[in-house]
Amino acid sequence: MKHKYLNNVVTLKLIEDKCVGCGMCLKVCPHSVFELKEGKARIIDKDSCMECGACAKNCPFSAIEVKSGTGCAQAIMVGKLTGSETTCGCTDENNGCC
Image 1: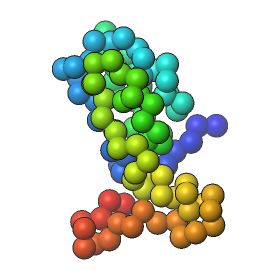
Image 2: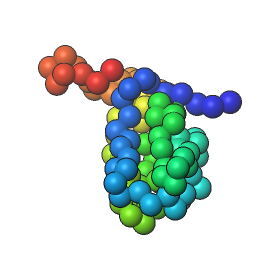
Image 3: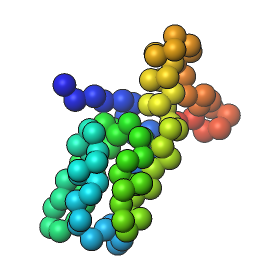
């Protein structure tokens, strides 16, 4: 079963100009967020990204950016695991994120 988190809140970004199509992101991503197409990586399932940071840490060309350990998905997972409030702290005051 493929995990989905919240829609449109992931910090994952691919800098296509830096990508050389080595495929490392595909190898390390636990949720198959990427594919190779026409010699470059592409994000195909951004909402499945759990912001673990494996792709960015293993990209030898710094073509991927992600704020690992942040965002709504991470906050909700921690809340569920610890039994605490499952919120990412987004409010209307800071323009919200979810």
